[in-house]
Image 1 (cartoon, rainbow, N blue to C red):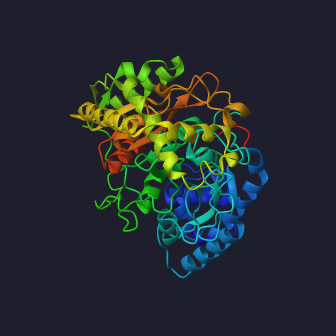
Image 2 (tube, rainbow, N blue to C red):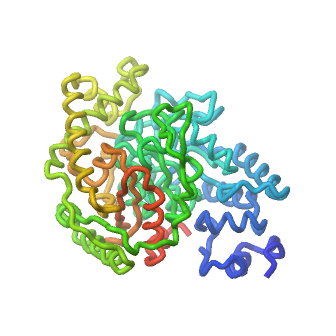
Image 3 (cartoon, rainbow, N blue to C red):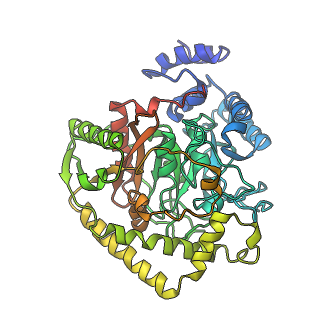
Length: 495
């Protein structure tokens, strides 16, 4: 089959013949659910054009996103200009790599020159940056097509501003979409972008990935520049991708990683080829497992899914090592609200409390809490964080990776009061036990689908690595996905 001869065929026929010609065992029946690795081959070989793909996704956004509400701003004109430029370059033989001509979307925390960046707030709804964030620049250099900016919680915390939309979980309406990077999780799961960008301060890459059934990669703190990304809590914020496969997460991470002169906190370590070891498997890897930590206070379906994931990794050649998470973890987790709210109050000092009435109930209360904490409170919380980090490093000693759940439960019923506030009185830091320790320490993690509960909602497991071990996380995650098919399931009702 000549790939170029497929150019004028309908997608259904292109897919059938191109899969065989390119050596793929199977391709998605729908273009919008292709993986980046599949789509990029079709674009590189000129079977499908960036313009064709971009038009299809923009049409899909127009058709179904008014109900899903994942996009804050759809950049129709800009996307088409970028798609046409990508097509022109590719036709001239100037192919830049796997993201060239691929439509993606970013969380509306990331500055985009000439396009408003609201951060889920009302106080910034008219803010139009004069420059692109580093991550947006890197996407543009890679030739990606930016479809738009994605909805999020106010200030990237947990509640929404009443002037902003709440994304709907595509697996079940009126169920939790995963907090801060909710728009990113929804758009990825529903085929409204081939990859999205999120941020993680206490779990907001991993939570939306978990409840929306996608992959979420939280990198080592500093591996991805935060220049031009609105802060929630500077010492805790991470920027990373949500995708439908682990390999796709690696492709995006390869593009957005690296030292940035504009961000002094970005790491100087060179970025290796993150997919170089993707076929090495799990043989000989030591994976840590704390049974009590991974099964306490979670639903039975989740416990069974985690046990199955553990057994699969063992069968794939990994050595399972019993480890112990920090014994005072519950105590350490209480430090996170002190640190996050204090840093958030500082980040919003230009607007709060002067424009107090423009904030939603949830985030307003969070900022007030942050203002009330003293310097002693903050120092003691930092001390608890350091103690937690020290104990977590001991947990990681002697193992390559740690396996645990990504989130303590699947998506749950979520009302307007839950979304818009006030903060629930029963909010428990213990609910973040699978995410916050890795934000404290800056250790990289990857969240992956690992099953479904009795209600048909996604469950997710998480691998945690040592600093700068993104390559190993991608290797292990891709191996797990080759042995399972959980990542191939799509939300019902959004064909």
